[in-house]
Amino acid sequence: MVAAEALRKRFGATQALDGLDLAVPAGTVCGLLGPNGAGKTTAVRILATLADADSGHARVAGHDVAREPDRVRARIGLAGQHAAVDENLTGRANLRLFGRLYHLSRAAARHRADELLERFGLAEAADRPVGGYSGGMRRRLDLIASLILRPQVLFLDEPTTGLDPRSRGEIWDSVRELVADGTTVLLTTQYLDEADRLADDIAVVDHGRVIATGTPDELKSSIGDRLDVVLEDAAAASGAAGVLHRLAGAYPALDGDRLSVALAHGSVRIADLVRELDRAGVAVGDVGLRRPTLDEVFLRLTGRPAEAGEGDAATGSGGAEADGAAARREEAVR
Ligand SMILES: Nc1ncnc2c1ncn2[C@@H]1O[C@H](COP(=O)(O)OP(=O)(O)O)[C@@H](O)[C@H]1O
Ligand SMILES: [Mg+2]
Image (tube, rainbow, N blue to C red):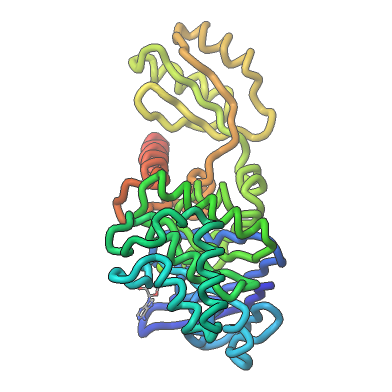
């Protein structure tokens, strides 16, 4: 439903897209995951016919974005990071206005507005001016405004950046609702947990190109499991690190009383580990094997953490930074 091949775009000295390839099957959610400046918005703008690529090709909903932009536009919706709704109007009036702008009849615009407000949980707030809405409600209204024409493909450019965790959850529910209708979604995000929860497939973007693709599970599997050890007493950290290094063949990352190390699949038995730690006199509160987080995947792929830019209250950023800090300590130990 979305196919991009070798897209390039330069702004002055900045190569925003440097040969980006992408393939999104119909009815799936693709998460375009990357840090600030990776080229996500540039890619979305080209796919949504708002900008031209310098070179490369892209087809959306069966039509070439450069040669048949009108046909593409008739089949897509776009909701961005900055809500496009009018503060002075009510939610319902905003949606009716969008409907009229999209050339629906007055009756059809009314009907579609009511239907969408009901479906996406904004019916109660629908007759209040948008100026009094929370950030999350505005963003949700913006999202449903992009659905008025029942797009086959929906582009969501960082739909939850800057939102609090509860509002993010509401947007996620709305996206799931859409996907249940068969809409194909291309979602950009710098939040690894967001891609993890919503996307069928993830394309990790860095410096204008896709550096890895796969399902969230595949990406996590590609770097092996993680072994976590929580110490009873952080003072035993160096003794524990020695044991982990001997068994796992790598130095663990240390974060307070928690050590974490990547494992080749099945390379260490928990029973052996516990026995060795005991022998070294290390008291352990908890030991566990777990799949790596997407933060750890990103770090492994790029050599640096996926820092969520805006310094907001969203849950994804804290995790990314904590893992980044742990990884830097891991490097320092080596
Ligand atoms: N209109 C523009 N003029 C100049 N530079 C731009 C413009 N749009 C994007 N860029 C640059 O291109 C790079 C990619 O930007 P963007 O696609 O917005 O990344 P992302 O959405 O992943 O944060 C950045 O270095 C950005 O500064
Ligand atoms: Mg962007």
